[in-house]
Amino acid sequence: MTSTGMLQVPEVFVIGAGVIGLSAAIRALEAGYKVTIFAEVFPAIDARSVKSPGSLMAELERETLDVFLDLVEQDPNVPVMVRPHFRFIETASMRTDAAIERRIHLANFYPDYRILEENEIPKGMSGGETNATVCVDVPKYLPYLMELFFALGGYAFRTKSPLSSLSSLLTGKHPELEQIREDGSSTSQFTTTPTLTPGALVNCTGLGARHLEDVLDTQVHPIRGETLIIRAPWVNPSITFHFNNSEISYIIPRQSGDVVVGGTFQVGDMHPVNRPDTVRAIKERIVQAYPEILHPEKRQHGGINDLEVIAECVGFRPARTGSVRLETDEIDVDGRRVPVIHNYGHGGGGYQSSWGSARHAVELLKQVSPL
View 1 (spheres, rainbow, N blue to C red):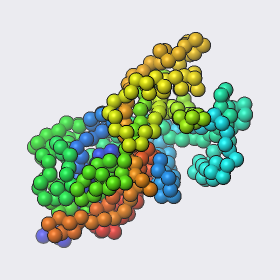
View 2 (view 1 turned 30 degrees about the horizontal axis):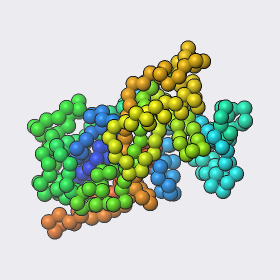
View 3 (view 1 turned 180 degrees about the vertical axis):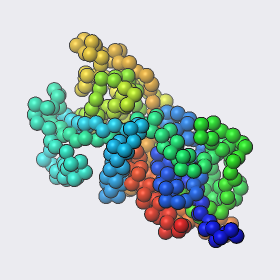
């Protein structure tokens, strides 16, 4: 207890400000911790264009879906929509053991899951299935989380260069800091000074976990994805097309009327900008598979030049060989053992597992830094 007789609230540092870091920080605040986020990049503010297998990910995704559905029901301002999702396969393989196992999983995951009838399958495809899902409007959702984080009393600091290690935050040898204000601006005039003795760290650094000196996780790797943002407010469903050559096309509608069109799955590729050949291939595949992406007046004779492309984007999914890392660890800081909760490696499943991961991280946090 402090000298005033009040219990001191444990302070927690969350490193990383993507969807995994923000969700974990929010749950920690709700649990009663004092939380400070540190990150070089705040996607909710910076607006940069930048699915793991296993039973744990399935559990995290199931829980996150329930949270999203509750948010949609309770908060009319949440930038998340419930939409029908269709998955079409060029050559049906519905009878293999893997396909049967997958259908059982989806039927348990989505109560409305069903296999499509023949008359529901588009030309060129031979099999399909459907279920309701949630579509997250990412450019709006991350600021929504950031606003919630500040409303709950959290603090955030930008490191003006990458962290060399987690422990550098606790020794004063970290990069220069700027405090993030609630309006998204930065200042060197702090309203609070981070302690050098937090109760624990929560490592949500994604790809950064590979380079931190006291983590050096060589199992972490990027999976590069190229997407296009297309203006098509008439598009309602989320759809994935699986082609015989292993290529995939997908569309994800947003509340804004924009549609995300992808995609690629390039393991280990860090090329930072779009490749013209890939952009053209993404356009050609989606126009052929789903001509409804075109404006109604252009569908009969239109082509890829009739797509209203707003942006060409490149992102790097922070994947990890084997599985997501969600566990307790320790680092040595000048002879002092500091607990670390690792929460990274979700690959392309970050949004769909974010709230489940956050709850697991806070449960681990309570074990190493009790309230």
